[in-house]
Image 1 (cartoon, rainbow, N blue to C red):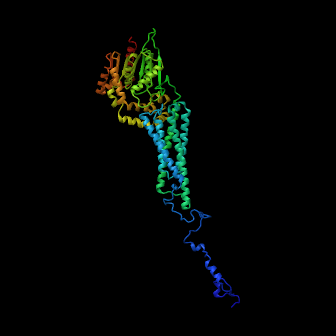
Image 2 (cartoon, one colour; image 1 turned 90 degrees about the vertical axis):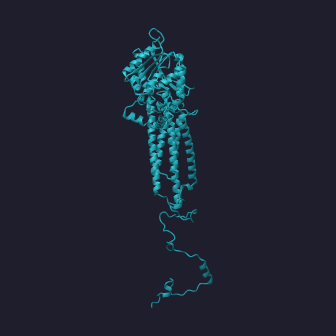
Image 3 (cartoon, helix red, strand yellow; image 1 turned 60 degrees about the vertical axis):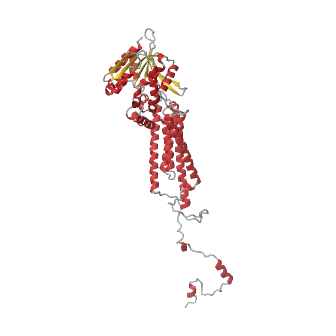
Length: 547
């Protein structure tokens, strides 16, 4: 056996063959109290192997806490007080937006003091609706932040900022919207920025809580979260498209502001809004004798669309010497009036505008359709200035309900008004049909304007109450000696016996009926046919030159 070979007993202990003295009693006690070291391999069943996510230094706060599953409800950004405060503020801003939305909704039907807009009341209401929808979506998808929503919120904010600049930089839009419309747009802009801030902050809080409670930021989403992201993205895409259309509509309005009115604008109702009044012609004939001025009241459309050209032609052929017309509130260049607006209210502001312009008559009143209601009220209140009445296919007050005041018609007008700031029909008309600014102000596209729709809604709301009562009372106080001429549509008379009976009743408004003409094959707008135009010009000449 080799001299230095290890014995079998000592080979396992790592000692050589030499014997060592036995440990003392004190050394044995120290070994018993010394903590035993464990190799990491011995604990493989209790601890995971270190990887790139393993902390180099222990977390003193969570050193004794086990990591949670990412799907655990406890892993939530709501654990952070900053996120909870952010949600409470979002609820507060939503409540403010809802209150503003309700006020603007009420102002469409009854304008509170100080909240009158001289343009369309639907414009600020639509922006308030957009802001309210934005806040609702922010609350619904508060806990599911999305990069797509943040990008779309930036797009919304940019477009809304452009809207604010356009409104404030163009004098006409700034005047029409006033502080109410401007406030709505600015508030909508601020709420879009708030959505951006909220979504970004919740994203940060979500990542922080996931790293703290699970050890890493979660990149996957559940099916419910993906559905929420999809719905929120679709909602914000729709809102972005809506704001883009509204921006283009404001640009159209800015272009239309470059077309000035032919007449002058006069402040009425204590300076709250302006009425457009235009007069043309000579007050006297060739001998110097004063002649009545024809005061034209439009029917269902602005005077400028049809009757203005008719009046110009009548002056050219000598049927009349002079005419004036005023746009009713909300029509053409006139501002909108506060709600409610009845025929009596409209006639009062017309009288104010005429007085401010120094126009005192005498008048021959020419009106068509529903415009005859306004002319009748004017005649009853200014009878000493009226020397004749000519009504073209007039509307009877008993037919206001079915022609103007139907509730279904009012709801459709309100619905059209709400979406009118999008300008879908106006934009398509301008791009594809060649519609001009004049078409939109008073022409064939005038019915697409928010002001016009709002004026028609005002007309609808009081047709069966205030306006009908004004017409009925005007019949009682009408000067019975005033000359009266009726020119009725042959098509309408043949179509409805009820319409024919009401035309006959209107022929008895005064006791001085000069003529009741029924023009065959003429529509409601009788002047569109040559026979109708000739008949109206003939009767106008008789009324103007009767003296």
